[in-house]
Image 1 (cartoon, rainbow, N blue to C red):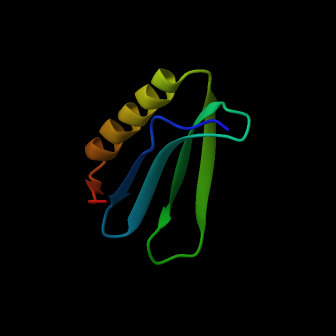
Image 2 (tube, rainbow, N blue to C red; image 1 turned 60 degrees about the vertical axis):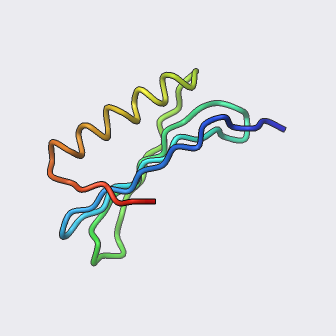
Amino acid sequence: MIVSTTNRSSLWLTDTRYYFLHVQRDLFGEWELLKVWGGRRSRRGRHQVVCVAREDQALGLFERECQRRIRRGYLRTAG
């Protein structure tokens, strides 16, 4: 069993949109960044899983996406 040392998630919102990020390990122990986005009043949404070799790469992608959300006017929610 592989125990993750990092469990980093972030939810970003605007008046009409949401964006969720999560750093995790898959079933094979590889690191990945899960990105989920869509409209707040819509059932339609999309997701993307970005696989990387190391934890620091996943965290780097996570931080870059957080900076992108700030530039695009999203607000980070608590929790």
